[in-house]
Image 1 (tube, rainbow, N blue to C red):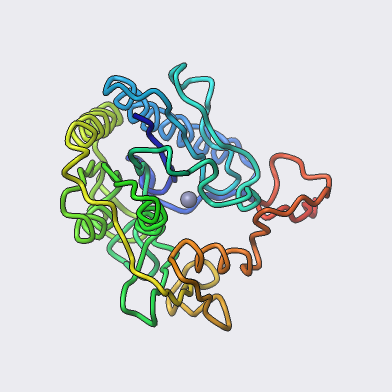
Image 2 (spheres, rainbow, N blue to C red):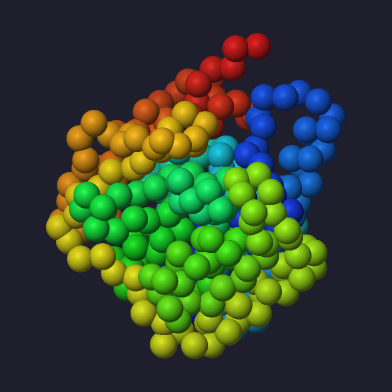
Length: 283
Ligand SMILES: [Zn+2]
């Protein structure tokens, strides 16, 4: 059994505001380091559960911002990690292919405009509003095209219920209750890790009873968002991307986004830390 773990940071226990990559203060540096450590431990709980369930291959995708958030030296030995230069991987979910048996979603956040959730952003519109997808459910749909079911999602009550409405059999680890975009009540990190560990184990033990999330093609796709993710949200693409499958439409859409250059091999003196889009720092 092979397990793919997609990660983000806004849905971890303890996270309550967008990441501030500008402010150069000790407080901000320490806060960000704490958040990366909390993320690392939640991801590690999922990886341990996959290993204890018999997974041979565990691939983790470090997918927030810079794509370099997880302290991979803290992870169990039996996993690999995709990391570095967010938005410049050849695809959004590198290495994801038919060889995987299950998808795990750690640290997921509500879709754009869902103001009950912490840090809501990104709202995919399928077929002019027939279906709306968060980043979490988009990952499930891309995996669904490969017949891979998602076994667990962790985050607040808003994202976990959106995902569960789409795939009722998925296990959830609700690690916080959000009161709004920048306010939530979190469980202790030790509890969050147990919820994730137990959810992944239970999901993998019941793999056969969890349906892959499939969206029938052809698909017309756009993304709604705005400056600072503040509503009203507007279509990011002037013209929606179309494709025979959700994967096809997604790959076309992301290549057109101003902040992503998926698959490009430009040499532009990229250095860490910097804007994850690769723009040169102004300082
Ligand atoms: Zn993120």
